Length: 559
Ligand SMILES: Cc1cc2nc3c(=O)[nH]c(=O)nc-3n(C[C@H](O)[C@H](O)[C@H](O)COP(=O)(O)OP(=O)(O)OC[C@H]3O[C@@H](n4cnc5c(N)ncnc54)[C@H](O)[C@@H]3O)c2cc1C
Image 1 (cartoon, protein in one colour):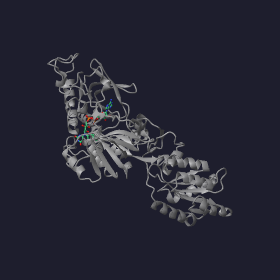
Image 2: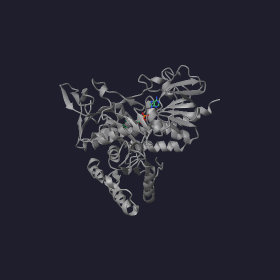
Image 3: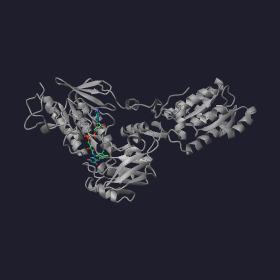
Image 4: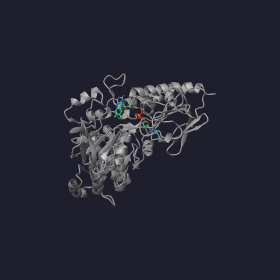
């Protein structure tokens, strides 16, 4: 029925139940328009609708729909009416016999018909093409931008819809977001045969429909790798933030068979930064997304393998082999491992907040949610650089931004350049000595309870968005019993492993641990996950590179 031709996506659809007429119409259309449009032919109203839905899911454009009036089961007017639900912008043409012109004229109002054509239309140069030329010209003048990218249909206040968007955005997969209660969202749901009770719905660029997908499903369908190509590597790097990306670039470029394994999205915390101003070599700042994109391309170019949506849940040591186990039970082994799992946002423990997470309350997703803050009063909790950057970024979208800081001043916790930037933006208000004590809302955030730290009553404010940036903690429980960590869960390395000159129990090599080496020989740690690390992009990248140098040293020492 359709002609798969990726280069000419805009279609002209013709529906006629008489195969001879149908072929003749398609032939005439192809003769004049075949070079620029895809001509799709269907022989019943139902087939025509199926073709339209398929094209809708693929993100194809349909410029004109021509339907014969006299068709059994679904006549041309009924078909065009239903076609309007799928492609409201397509021009509609009814093909009629002379006897049916009355019906055609009535249809002008029913289905907002653009034209009716009397059959037969020989010669097409006189009767068919001038009409279609006009219709195509008017269609081209209207707004119908192609949307070949991934589409997400979801509910404004659904935590999983928000999670899916964040996953796609952070993995730099272009997508378009449709609210399920808006006309185009409804049209996509109908085209996918869904009633909208199970959301989000994701439509992959090829038209494949995913209902409530997991991150793994999503990753696989949008072209991200989720399973290792080999069983054994020289180096497994766990966590694709700046430290992991740095390690992957240096590992792969120096000839190590390297795989980089990431739970969520490459870039880590830095990937969520609206603008990193203090990273060497970027005097005008660089967005986390840009830096991540460059680093990822660089690592890939050197031959590092990158896996996404792969959470590591265990590290096993068996002689010289280091086995890294994933959440789905599968595993990959290597001679050496670099832990670069960084830190994850700390949750704000306030009554009512947990249920509203992803429904107006967000942890560090200021970039993804910014566009949805148009004309809203937005609140941010936190006084460090990440909160400051979010405030600056959100102020470009929101009506007002209120920064809630527990301490007495911003200066104590935020870089000077950011404090100055914030002072220069009139729509940002800083409330020091203030904390959130409660949140309320029916299905989504509607209000916050605020209290002055120094005492005093509780103030209730209307709020539709709250972004929380209150520091972060390592999530390293899965290393229990394998790798030594400090009381906060940060991984101990090198000199920090020795207490009063004594090496950690079980340390076998007749040498001291290398500088970034953990209590397990051949397993290194770099970046924010490491105890006493600097918690900066530059230091994370530097440690990633340095860890690779130490991996070489370790490998050279192996028997
Ligand atoms: C909003 C924001 C703005 C910032 N701005 C700046 C700035 O301007 N300048 C600056 O120098 N620093 C800034 N920082 C700090 C900087 O981003 C971090 O110091 C840096 O990202 C640390 O890098 P990392 O690779 O050690 O860890 P992370 O960036 O935390 O990356 C760790 C990665 O490991 C993954 N991971 C964790 N556990 C697992 C697991 N079990 N399996 C698989 N993967 C896992 C995570 O998903 C994550 O992607 C900012 C931080 C934030 C949050």
